[in-house]
Amino acid sequence: MLREDNIPIKDYFNIWFNREKRKEFYTTSISLYKTTFYHDKSNRFLNILFNDSKNDKEIYFSSATLLEPFEESYGTFLIKFLNANFASFKTFYRTFFCFYGFSILCEFYASIPSLKFFKTEDEFIETYQPIFNKVKPKLKKLQYLIKQCVDYMYNLNNNSIDKNYTPLEKYLSYSIFNNLFKYSTNIEVYYYQQFAHDIYHIASQSITPKIVREHLENGIINIGDSPIFHTSYLSNILYISLFEIASNTSIRIKVCKNCGKYFIPLRNTEKYCDIVYCENEVTCKMIGANNSYSKKRNTIEGIKFYRNNYQRRLMQVKRSNDEEIRIAFENWKKLAKEKIKEFNNNKISEEELLEWIKEN
Ligand SMILES: [Zn+2]
Image 1 (cartoon, rainbow, N blue to C red):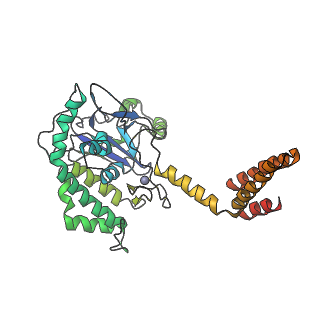
Image 2: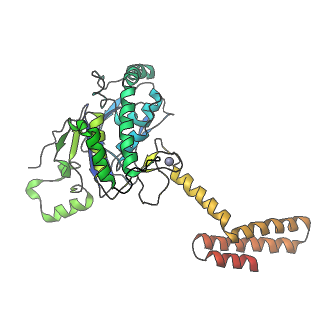
Image 3: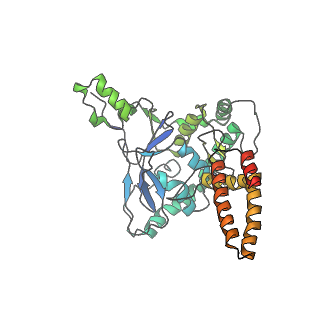
């Protein structure tokens, strides 16, 4: 028999990871205040996005389950906490708690109200804002502690101490010195995960290697997933997340060159983050790609030459009424654009482009 699903969900938080697929899954209970569920093409399950324009009069709530968890890219919980803005209840909600729910604050505030239906927006805010105000100093302290650790591990934000040691070595030394282990006392670990996504599709009496192969391919059986970590303490979830990242030597945390947020690059050469909180948000990666593209264009001799010539020839056309000059200009413009396109697609070199523009 496959193991039964008896991991508590309501008012608890469960998280697990898949290093190979660079994914992170979690279950929590959240209020549906200014949130939307989003299905990214590369995800199997939904993720949560903030939606400021959503104007629900009444506020419902929802929980993810082990069979239908929320899915995020690897390390998102830690990254979102590092970047969370605790300036006001509004920023606190939109940068962190709309994704993870309030129940994970129970270590700082004894009587977090159980999730319920709110008749109005004001009722919702009046319930949680005072709690936020109370726990804010503790959240900031915790964020500072984790930030210091990450800055030290990856030598970020002008921290260049112990540069010759690995992130893991520095993480362990920081953890021992600051006794981060005190944040690991409320975690239960469940070895259940391989079938967590779809146990009902696996009939134990008729299982064959052929069926196992199919399920390995379609992801119903996934031996790449970590155990499920079960806790309701924010600090303990952070402890798990930080340990997961620190012990994974194939990834690193960087600071985005555009917005200054922490992020986990897909490739080591990446400078810009792709962090989004809302639907259709333009990422720094998109902005960065455009900027470096136009910057690159301005330094290409052939393109500079083309632009100068373009202005000069356009003036000529405007000054004369000669139809032939205009046609010659249009033809030249068309051919030059094609050549630049070839250059952009790496079909011809920078030198070849310049040569052609000069010759024509
Ligand atoms: Zn950024």
